[in-house]
Image 1 (cartoon, rainbow, N blue to C red):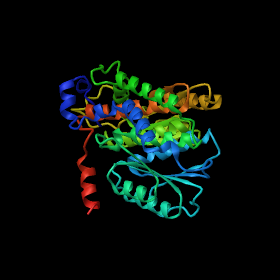
Image 2 (image 1 turned 90 degrees about the horizontal axis):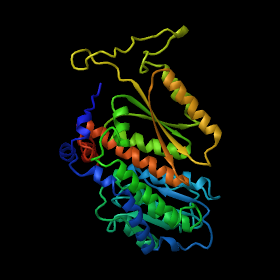
Image 3 (image 1 turned 120 degrees about the vertical axis):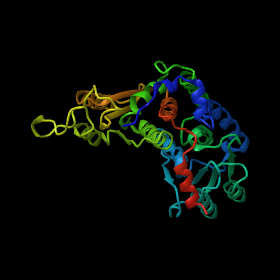
Image 4 (image 1 turned 180 degrees about the horizontal axis):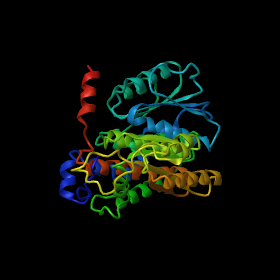
Length: 391
């Protein structure tokens, strides 16, 4: 069973030593990324895409850590207008893409084979092309040849896990101009301010009993975590959180979102990872009860408990039925001894709520890694995989 050392989370010297590439500091630049992204998108001409009317459809080409751009845009576009947003990570390009559509290709390095290939094919079909990535890259070259709009990312941005808003902001700026989403300058300015506020609350010098990201890390790092999003937007945040737990903290987790995944999540509450060891026929335990006095160093390792991280929205547009279902899931979790932690995104609109929750869970994954004595910036197994597959 993993053991998180809370003392590490409040030892600034040790945090700096473990965090070899300033992962936590990079996360704290999210607000600045939004402001820089707005400026760079405007300078690149993202607000002047050459379409006479709304596009028929928008296709976002992204993979890996950049895929959340497509997911977030799709959710934000659903409630605003009639323009569907699709996602594709690798070739071939869907057969319906043509001159009436906008294709957005996102790759931090500008070298991801899927987005580059899809952008080139979109250009050949006459689709309007918007790309976001490194300034001098194959993706930028494809965009220039297509006479599209390429928005470069700042050169200091080096990892997709810490640069979500450098990638997403230019896409939101362009899609707002096209009438696909409602994310004007005032909204994005609010997003930047909220991200700054989260960075302040989750700063390394904030002690673990008041720092919301450290509290969440302590709650979940020693569990088998299920991350459940309350609604579609929080479903995007849940998948982002699970990716962060896996990639940054090396903790496997299961994502879900309400209402679709309520049954399969609640079903796990009666399994071997709950405090009672699972309930069999007639309510009898099928496994041994957890020994709260067991010494993790002297006694045999115990099965880690199930943990539930519920990501919620608070706003006037949240349906009462959604809130009622979330409360029912929480009650079931507490009744069966699941370790529960809630994170609530508040704000005037959906993108602001999404930003606050994603920021907190990004910090949470980083602190979970640090509390386990791991470097959140690097992973030798991922490096070995890249060496084996890129030749």
